[in-house]
Image (cartoon, rainbow, N blue to C red; front, side, top):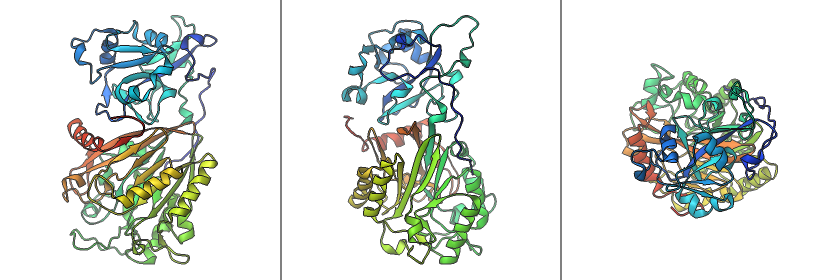
Length: 478
């Protein structure tokens, strides 16, 4: 398990507020980082810096058609001097409009225009475009190679700018939380894992182990005597203890236990599973030794960001058997959960809620699912995620929260059940200085009953287009 530790802060010599002109900051020499921001429902993921520069200065050979998906760009008057220092020239006004910052962030602009913004202005309703595949939101980002960097203050030919402090992006305040969908190491997946327990993650491992906090929803208990079936006739599941190696290998930090199959083999495997997680030092929620334990939020802090994970099973009571005296998954008590969320929010703790809910093989949630998700969102949950869905579902994003009704499978053998069950999301939620600032949607496709890989650009674009058509960005027109 990865250690959730606080990284020492960079030495910051000057604090920059979002409304301060770069020209006004002359007392110190420091670096100021910018990002390319697009409407959230944008298919383009990456742009080359050379294309961005030629769009800026008008040297693109086909400027009227844009560059790498850009058709128009906005920048603020306050940031313009710094941007000119980066690009080496004034922008071409035909495609780049310069506005006062007070006029930049209107709903129409946010929903339609690309922008170049300082790091501190990143917000959830805007997609951050990577530059030459470098991601300013990623926790392993290297600021020394970032092209959209302005040096503020006096420098000489001998100045090593990589030694200058970074004022507006402090890595010690950043946390990446990765949420995943269904894990059930059974049947066809198990058949591969008997040969190599690490095989299912072999092509998607790196972003998982890079997470500061990696969530896994493991629906199935471990059992000492577990007869694995490779057919689809039975839905009574268990996993062999040797499969725990996969969860260890990807750096699992927290386990959701409100899945349908947690008590498929009675109490002894449940207790064995809890002992295994305790021995590995992995906290769990949504299930436990009894109802009271399962209902308690699990608190995790990282880089000064404080999180609470809560979860429950919203199906009929038979799927959630935890009681005052019996272990298992816990049934949803929405009134209790909303009360907990409000109390946590008052304490400055960020509530993350995951549901094992009613399963429908459709992109839009049914009314009961939507009602429960919205209830915890309205109570103050910042992230609400559906762990039950075997296909990718729609999402809603606002300036303060992200609701995703279903991600699809992470480790489960439904690759050939439906075309949609071969696809899935892995959601990377980004928090900075106690605030939710963005979500990046990673996309995977299964190639057999155990193995998935990150989608190629064509497949990814098709999935995003399908989901974007029905997803909502609060307060903004599509």
